[in-house]
Length: 313
Image (cartoon, rainbow, N blue to C red; front, side, top):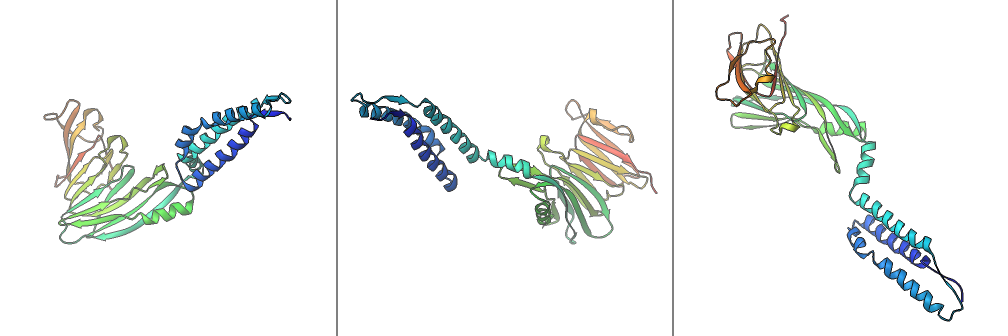
């Protein structure tokens, strides 16, 4: 009788079966990894069967049984390695790693246009994304003009530009209110999430109530609102925005009011604020400032407000 090497046949059989199972799972999308982990003791059964087979085969004493320790070790090494690759693939970690290498940051230009404001509209509400800088200017007619640009993550410049063209400003008139939703330019590549840094320019008609609203998720709010020198005409409210920059000149004509503003973040460099700490929590104040005759009003609810004086030309 010939020499028997225990472990060689089990390794060959295990490689074939394990390869077929993993191939079927990956191509067919079947979640078989959990079952493989539960069935791994079959390897011990196969090894034990192979040992008994060789002992029985050489029971007459004419042959010797040799244990192929290398094959036995390799069975478990290949088994663990194959399962590791399978779970990395099934959990999309490999795809995410590939995307993190292939995805780049590209500059894009958003569609620009205008919106006619109907005669029934009394208020304009602008909903700002969490990562955007919005410059607000005044418009000389009954229309809203908008444009924007930003950066976004994509696998190619062409894909970024194509995606940006689909991200148009959405608006809806409900009664006397016109709602504007600025696109966030967000993409999600199977878990590889990105949100572009945006810059919008809006020109709003005069003598309307205007509300600019950011996200209320404070720790994810990086929005910035920049108000041009003579943009405030009517009653304005800016709330839930991380940073508000107010530009003023000698033609500015409004009362500014800060609501529940952190006292240590109050800008006292270029404006004279009148403080009112009544009715606020410790560390917060209300404050007002007057520009020109104070014909119009601007109310701000934000943690950081900067007032910038612009010399008139």
